Amino acid sequence: MMEALVCGKTGDPTVSITQENSPISLSTSYPIPLLNSPTAVRVAVRATSLNYANYLQVMGKYQEKPTFPFIPGSDYSGIVESVGSKVSKFKVGDPVCSFASLGSFAQFIVADETELFIIPAGCDLAAAAALPVAFGTSHVALVHRAHLTSGQVLLVLGAAGGVGLSAVQIGKVCGAIVIAVARGAEKVQFLKTLAVDHVVDLSRSNVIESVKEFLKLRKLNGVDVLYDPVGGTVTKASMKLLNWGAKILVIGFASGEVPAIPVNIALVKNWTIHGLYWGSYKINQPGVLEDSLKELLSWLAKGLITIRISHTYSLSEANQAFSAIRDRKVIGKVMVLLEDHTTMRCKL
Image (tube, rainbow, N blue to C red; front, top):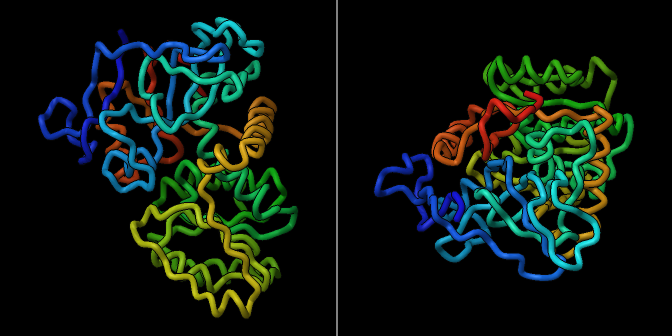
């Protein structure tokens, strides 16, 4: 038997898991998943990410609605614990990472060997677990879809969150001029440490005025790529900053408001609007995800990107982890660690 975080109904996951109205509970006697094919691998999970999508899923507001009860899932890392008879890529003891729509908030998870990635030497387990969804989303969006190139202007909304920080870093790796938008002095100060070209603090500045002033100073015409995981009023304002031929990457709606994109202006200015649901690539174009994650892991090993882990929790503290996501207290990633926090090396 194993420990697992089980969602039995929709509801507010920030409520203490000991309360009767909590939608999630910690089971200490959940069956350990069995190897279900000759190429299956069982992983002892050491770390798993908590993403905004997990919060929405438990609330019943996500596009995918699994049957109850279920174990929430996300990107994760761990150690290979057992392998099927035809597994050729991995052996017991290998450090691996991957992502799952369900099941990673538990001590063990089973995946096919084709879904796992070896963690390069020098990369720690917590960082590797934080990589696939956030950095994978931004890499596919910016590199595969927008074809971001050196010298282009990239505007990142929600830049201090998990996907936002990844977009900022990938933008710099690509050689783009990066403008980051966040709210609050602490988040702005951290973004400045990433060598961002310009930072807009929404608690003090107007995004249009601040960005236009920067563009004028640098003799730039406008924004070439808009990376938007936020939606709402800041998206509407950002539209006024876009160049002719700009690309809009629709990543999510953390503000809770789905913006109306003026398609008449998109027509006149030849904008391209990309919807990006990263998880669907696993079904439709798995090769894109595989190539993307391999490149990201190599970048992590080389130090081209770093993982900012903002908060860490145990499974029994899951409601606190959900609260951190809901209350936007996070600069970077929220992680659930499945071993003693003091024994897991991670780059905080």
